[in-house]
Length: 386
Ligand SMILES: Cc1ncc(COP(=O)(O)O)c(C=O)c1O
Image (cartoon, rainbow, N blue to C red; front, side):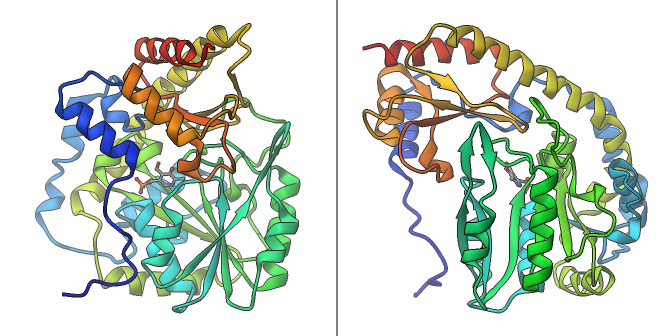
């Protein structure tokens, strides 16, 4: 049987293979990469979450391709900025939202511009829709910057859309207000749609004064804007599987109608996730506060351990759940991560996992329980000592 050429080779990378082997041997691993909030020691209001998922309305099948109006109204209220239920379409995840938007906006062989370094799924999400993801490198100079010149130079007559992540994962870069104005202007001029992934927008940490807190603050963007988010980060409930797309700008109503047609072919959002959404969004602020406390606690631990260290420093964290560490690039990040795992039992992500250029970057999750974070960092610093 011949499988689709859209698929990657499915063998695990060297780091994953080592991890699986060590776990099979019963070795204890200090995992500093965990970003699954349900395993990071947060206190969930379990009874309320379970009650929200047991709404009697789920006994009837009454699908709406855009998602239930009640859930959409609650999501619109969560965002504010005059967003209405009619501006939204529900999905089972942000990944599914990308799939629907790529189907909406592009034909096979068309291109989408994606940020780099960033979330490693873009290449595959585009490729699985028959599209080509063209990475555009951001650069770091005191803070991260979108390279608008490089972005415009990458646009071809096959380019249909630009993807940005605000704040970006793992760099934490929030777009600045001037970057937003220039980006939407460029998209309008070149006839492109703009997809803004804001799953981490509620987690601002070390904000520069001119950051774009959310693309939804722009009520009348000059180009079509699609903002993506979901309960996986907004309510730290990835298992509920509820995401959404908010459409703004020229052609938004027609886009939502076409998106509803696409969503109607799948109807993938479960009745229980939709029925629970208003109650889960009401519980979400307290859950997010626990996460924000964790992020700040771990950053403080990190800063105290890095004090006076010559071999390791960190980049500023404008937002999100990750921190980037800089180490001397005396060897490859992948090789370093592998050695650290095998000799010290500490798991970190090499920068290349997120397409950070060159070597000298490690990525840690700030969701890690603080005791484990501190222990893992101490082992990492010991491994770096000459
Ligand atoms: C930038 C970004 N978008 C989307 C997601 C995933 O969201 P979902 O669980 O809704 O697919 C992640 C997960 O880490 C992410 O980093």
